[in-house]
Image (cartoon, rainbow, N blue to C red; front, side, top):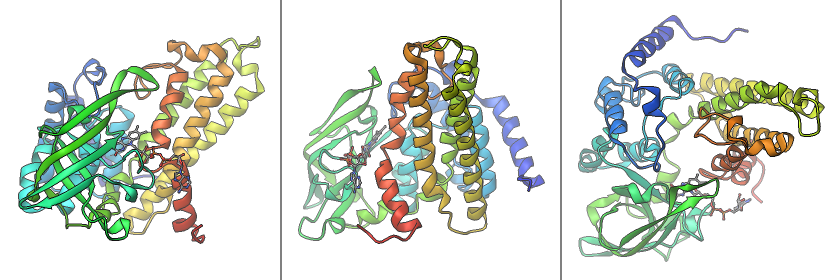
Length: 397
Ligand SMILES: Cc1cc2nc3c(=O)[nH]c(=O)nc-3n(C[C@H](O)[C@H](O)[C@H](O)COP(=O)(O)OP(=O)(O)OC[C@H]3O[C@@H](n4cnc5c(N)ncnc54)[C@H](O)[C@@H]3O)c2cc1C
C-alpha cells in the first residue's frame, strides 16, 4: 500500500511552502533564546500576526480567526511542513493551543471580542493555572477558592508549575466555586488579570537549565475578579477540561515524531565516535541494537499517527492519538537514556547535539528535558490508566 495525499492537497502544500519561503523570519531570529513560554518578543508578535493575517495561524479555523477552513488532511500537511522546518507558530503555545480554543468554544461574544482576537494576534500573553501543590494528576482536588461577592469573585489560593506566569497578561485559572458538592462538580474557570493587586508570580528555574525560568508558583490573595470573567457556566469548569480541544491537538503528535527522527539522525551520525570502552560506537552491539529498535519505533509512530489521521478525516474516532503521547514521549526518553549510558562522559559534551532539537543542549540535557513530554497534559501513568479504561475497556481499579 502506498500512502499519499490527493492532488488538491498537494496544491495546498505548494501554496503554503511558497508563502513560507517568502515570509518566514531568518533562522537566527527564530533561534533566539526564549525567555519563557509567554514572553512575546517584538519579532514573535509580528510573525504570529503575519500568520494570522494570511490565514496560516490556525488553518482549520475560518478566515476571521486566522484560518482558511482547511480540511483535516490539509491541516496535517500544515503541521508537517511547519515542524519539518522547525518554524514556531507562536511563542505562547498554551495561548494558541488551549486558551484560544476554550475561548472560541465557551466564551461569550463579549469575551471573544475582548480576548480571542487579541490572543490570536499575539497582542496579549497567557498562562494556564491548573496544577496546585496538592492537585496535579488529580486536578479535581484543586483548592484555590473563588467566592462570589456582589459583582466580583474574590480569589485565594496557590498554583504551581504555571508556565510563563511572570510574563503573562492573563491567566485561565481553575478555581473551586462550590466546596459542598462532589469535587468534579464545584470547579469553574476564571480569567484573571495577572496585573491585579494580590497576584504574585514567583518564577523558578528548570532542573535541566538553571538559567531558564519558565515555571512559576502563583499566589492569589484576595484577588478581585469581575464576574463577567467567568468562562463557561458556574461550576461547570470540568466540562471544559474534557471539552472539544482535541481536534488540533490530535495532530500535535507530529512534533514528537519529528523530534524522535532528529534524535535518531544524531544517533546514527555518532556511529564513528570513539566508544568509552574502546573502538567506535558502531562496534558496540548495544549501539546497533538501539539504532535498530529506535528506527522501528519512529516508523511505527509515524504510521500510527497517519492511521489516526485517516480515521479522523473520515469522521471516525481515532484511539491512535491516545497512544501516541505515551509511546512517542517514552520511546524518545528511552533513546536519550540508553544513548547517555553508551556515550559515557561524551553525553555532557554540548557538541553532541546541535540546536535543532528543542533548544540547544547536550545529549544528557536533552534526556532531562524529555521529562517535559512525559509529565504535562497527563503523566505516562495517567495515560496508561486512560488507555486501559477507554481504549481497552478494562474495569476501573
Ligand atoms: C514542562 C511542564 C509544563 C507544565 N506547565 C503547566 C502549566 O502551564 N500550568 C499548569 O497548571 N500545570 C503545568 N504543568 C504541571 C503538570 O500538569 C503536572 O506536573 C502534571 O499534571 C502532574 O502533576 P504533579 O506534578 O502534581 O504530579 P502528581 O500528580 O503528584 O504525580 C506524581 C506521580 O504519581 C503518579 N500518579 C499520580 N496519580 C496516579 C494514578 N491515579 N495512577 C498511577 N500513577 C499516578 C504520576 O504519574 C507521577 O509519576 C507543567 C508540567 C511540566 C512538566
